[in-house]
Length: 240
Image (cartoon, rainbow, N blue to C red; front, side, top):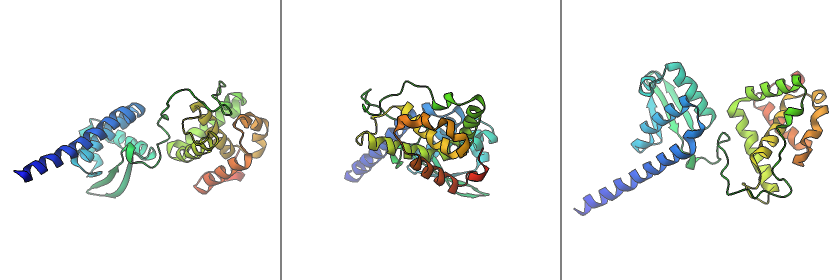
């Protein structure tokens, strides 16, 4: 009888963890995913964490009918979830793909696609909450279109790194308060990194002063741009 009681306690504790993870999934992640990614991530959670494991092996062809979507939709959704670091593909074979399904609470860094939690509107006086629109609104029509197109082409996976760098940079200047700056200011800092990544020196000249509200050095932005290039971006000599 004692053994049964211990087993019941273990099962209760395990399911309590599953319920906690499921509530986190539904409250903090799902609202920020496209419909197809919600469906696939939800199903992968069911096949992994609901079975007391972060791993699941399944075929795309089997996953599609379980999710009620097409095979191509599953492939696109998996690609998006990988870019957002919510899943990781560990092994692929004819018998199926092994996925590691991440939970938000187990990630080292909060994914860039999620809004940052805020306690209130108490921003750093030095950095403040800018009322200005995105910096690229001040670009010429041609340069604005080029900037937006290049930023979109970088994709979520490539933008995760500069977003994390921007958060660290701003946090340091907000007296180590990760909530002491606005989302708009974070957007501007990420756009500064993208600006130095996608524009050549001649095209940058008319716009460099637009980023002075960040109190950043151009050398820091160039270092981030160099890290992008090392990861497979267009060669500097080929920039517009």
